[in-house]
Length: 261
Image 1 (spheres, helix red, strand yellow):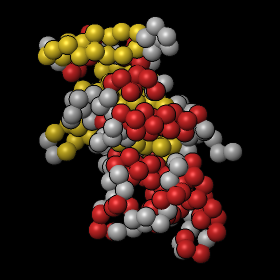
Image 2 (tube, rainbow, N blue to C red):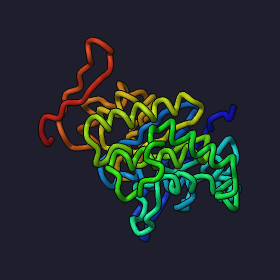
Image 3 (cartoon, rainbow, N blue to C red):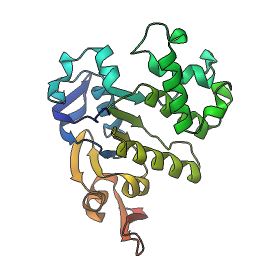
Image 4 (cartoon, rainbow, N blue to C red):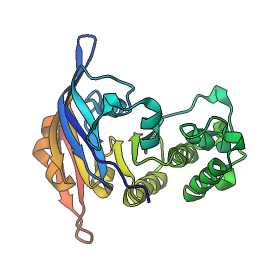
């Protein structure tokens, strides 16, 4: 069985022209851990994900994957270790669901249409995500929830050890939000570390093992949801007043917004 990854972000700083997008970010991601990146718009969540997948190069600092410097890992090897779930696929491609999921096999083969293992892995991923019945449908015809499941199936077909997800529940109704987060939790328990950026504090509190609270590119707090989601920290970062309560039945915490600070 493939084991999940450990990763360390060591003092990463990123500039976009004169704007500092990340400021000395330090973070460890452990094996089989579901880590949530939270923070307001512009806090650096997406930029951090893009750094780990080598879409963005830090100005300072380093990222280590299993102790290896990310800069020494080639893109093909990286794509066999880490999968990134895109926020969308260009509609102009007009691909079927099966085509989209098979794209996840690209790091392993040069001609996927002749590769039996890739067909088996793609079918397995579609079955796990409950989209196998959609395999011949055009991706552009699907609902938002179906599209999200297909994109995660594509990532699973890649056989990664770590999964990066940006806004996994955006544009989804409550039922599908819960379904996607439950799925990511199961993935994290199945030997794939998960790092997800999200705006939904309550979903993050319910499903994530650890939260990373960012503001203006800086890490404000890292820890269990009950440690990070305090009224004081939320007021500092989001500039709103909240109440934080604990569910009597399952002990999970939830955040109730009150008013701007």
